[in-house]
Image (cartoon, rainbow, N blue to C red; front, top):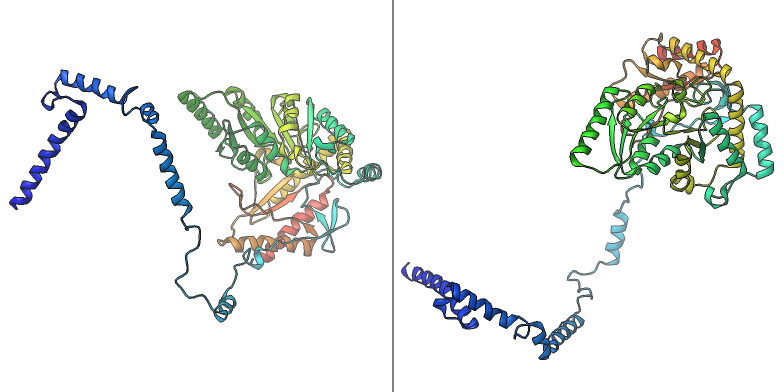
Length: 519
């Protein structure tokens, strides 16, 4: 053990002595003076003489004495080495190649995975085929039925005036527009419809989109980006959810129609921005006038007070409230006693009350004109076929002329239907309070099966029984798997202004009969 220990001590001694000796040799300073103040100063001067301008280790000195030839020669050697490498050639396989017989056997054993999984029978889409015009009654799967499934709330779709206007438009303009609005797809009937919508809604301007589901998902990203904040009701429909996602903004969700939770989030955003000293950004509250997934109303008066208090903007999606709520049918904003200019953005669908296709957005000139360059569904989709624009215009004229009488009948029928459905045992009617005026009714089983598949299958059987046995058409809503908060399964009924008391009674009796036989 003595020799290794002596060797270690010797190595430590050399390591301690060698650096000063080498430094003294290179810098020309005696080793015993190297660590003194004078020695350090002399060493620094000597070091600068060697590596400074003119010194033997300075790059300029090196290049002046043909040092660049050394670098160039080194690079040439590296390039030649890489050029002579054969790594790009595949190495010979050490294994023996497969024989033809082995290849055939592997091909026989290979079973490709299907592109989509095989769907169980209960998972397949159940399609009802409609033949003929859709009105109060409709022929579906060859059977005449009372229509409680479509959003034709005022029964304006396919009325005689709308059909005649559409025929004349096809004769004059043909069927399609064949281009986006900014690329020769703007037709005069589009501009006439936009002017009529702005006038009816009491706003500066309006813009129309070719597809209603793309309206909200185009409007939201047009006004928000990654620096902005969106606060959204948790039960907003899929287009709004997609719009919030596409905007890349910070998205916060508040409990459905819970104003205390909403105010909590508004305070939280305010406090966070002040603490982090964030720059000014856009802050928007997103709600629906009538929630398509629930059927109840947004408390817009309270929402307006909160957005004014905390200096936020408000966007209201009026797909199921336009032409349904308000004194003249302008929607939930009018129903809440607010002026159109008190809500920054209002959008909705022309595929419900107007009985056409497409969507719209109304507001100030700045709000609308900004979308003509930033609304993706407006800029990149073929414009609305002309006959659908004139059909929507015709229905809008009817709404403006006969709105009060049609709206009165619709609200009477909606209240009566809800009142009678609440008496049906085994069912729960979604919504309450202000929801009495909503013609969109969601029904849920009071005691649903524990198994989700069995629950959904039971609902489809109930809807099929009502159609086949009683001639009443209702629907089981289908929601996207991407829904953030999908509502519970149930039945959906859409009340029309054309219904009579006998129709409401027939619908309620059909539900009672199906429930008694199947539940």
